[in-house]
Image (cartoon, rainbow, N blue to C red; front, side):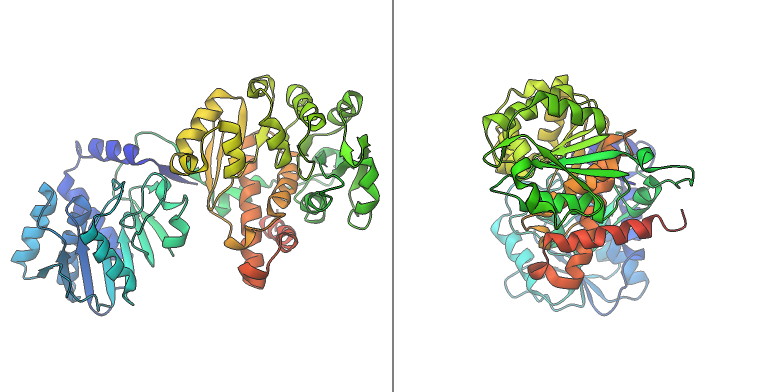
Length: 495
């Protein structure tokens, strides 16, 4: 796992580090790490703004000069931070060419280094700076952004016209803005370098392959299906029978590890699932006209027999389903994953029932989370970490917020999962994720946040592999299903 932190945290950590090591030395260390991580070739242009991010660029120019790599500095305005001015003056003394940007400035370079804004940038970009950023993006150069792409918000990853980089080199620690919202569309490759800044406060962790591999423990011969959990996915209706098929595929055909799976559907549509349910079993539930009806006895039986239950896909929104969701939240002592229409039904209830729950996991996309919080989608995009913290501190739940980078948070855990692709923006993708999560939580309940994050990683990676085979336009959710089993097989090889 790698740490991911807020802008405020890195500012405070940076200030603390300066008590032990000078800010000039930290600036030089940053430029050294940038120098070490780029394949320098041809002519280099370093484009600088006015703050310490520009100072990293001035210091970098000295290293390039020392290593006989042709470079030139472009400044946008003649304003400097104290440490930046120190390295700017050194660059002048060492004969490095410096020009001030104008409309005729050339951006015909092999490599352009973006040192315009740092992570502290927020708001809008003024005209002159936007012209420079546009010219960088229109060049055919290899673009390196230092710390973060200029114009990209370091806390929420929102851009209204930022630098699009081939490589972004984060300094000290990753920030939320490296992953959220627009970040994946403007950063082709992202690395982090350590310059000796001790992070004062742990916040979030980026889940990586090794973290997922460690999740799967060796299994013993002297075991049976009961050791690995009886799980269920409850959903579907006469209007939406397809989603429960995908959830079924997600939990059994792709085999993430649970022992037995049940597909719980309105009894009148059970025949529709027969061709699709092989290893799983169908559990018909009382219904009326293809819709679930509340039945306390049936729900109690399910909760007594299962080790994890996922509910919501394709079930529709009505009073009977709201009664079902309320009963499950109040009475399920097993992990209960609420998705899709389950969330929409929940949003119509008093959310304080979540504080009577045990292990409830909510898996909303932005619009569903907007219904739960009453915040607008735009506000949540801009303040996703803040809104999530507020929500999980108020209610006894784990939230998986879907997006370009998935966020998993509860009172104890905060994870980012940077997997997935545009091809997963198709109906059914969330249903597959539900099946995967149910399968994993059926046998692993010790750390709910971690288990949910592992499921999000597997599902996202499966989508990426499906995209490589079929492309983002052609792939469908069942293609993601087909790759989940292969990923789990690879992760558990030699266990």
